[in-house]
Image 1 (cartoon, one colour):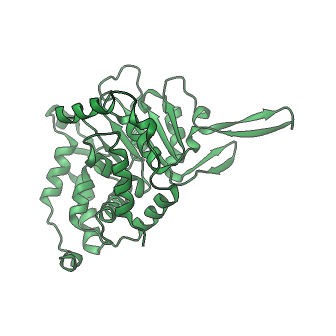
Image 2 (cartoon, rainbow, N blue to C red; image 1 turned 30 degrees about the horizontal axis):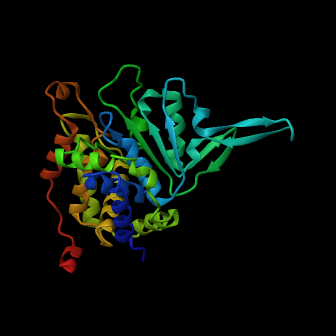
Image 3 (cartoon, rainbow, N blue to C red; image 1 turned 90 degrees about the vertical axis):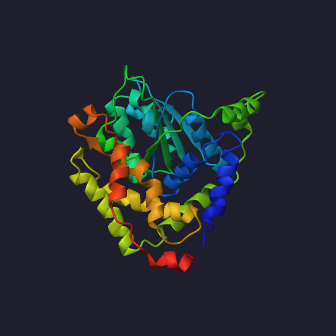
Length: 319
């Protein structure tokens, strides 16, 4: 069986040569990638959102492309286009940046809805259709999108359909003073991301993705996942709860978290570790709840705490 824990440790140790004090966010990033999901980083400028994506790509040794989203960015700038070749008198397809294995969509909310939707098929199907021809994307395919929650001028908020395509949304946050001091020491001469060398191959990440799908999910744990998602649909403060895709995403993420911890079965604690980044961007609050400054993170926490935690046979076996 693929050593998911060992591969993850190699990637994390390598990335931490560049990014300091973000172990939990790195674990969530790998859980999302190993679950074949995509990541939305929503945070203020300058907290290493872009560097995280570059460091992940550099550690795995897969192809990396950056899409700088602007209002004049066209869908063909993302997917590629057919270009006429006068020598052969035929149209040739020239692939766009979406054909990289790890794609950074920087400030995605600055692109128009038309361009944002060009990412939908790629994120959902791992393929792109241009001029009626479908092109498969190379695994392990990951989209890391970033957006600034503070500056809303000249932005286009992501529609619910697009938000639902992201498996997780989380923040990096500011570093502590000690972490920032370490960062200043690291950056005295040159940025360490330029010296980053691959420690695992793309094929090993694909093997981890396959191993995650084999992680056992007990029927009681499945019921626990469904109860959490169904309670979001019936909560008095929530106008739109989690979709069936949210249930699938929560199960996949918990499988990845169990594999990262060296287990081949899911425990309720694995679900608790991923439930907030998987769910809170999929929920829409009622207007009166927003006026009371209620947050989706608080509601998810309340829902999880109100549900009885199931006892799984694997817990006894693991002790």
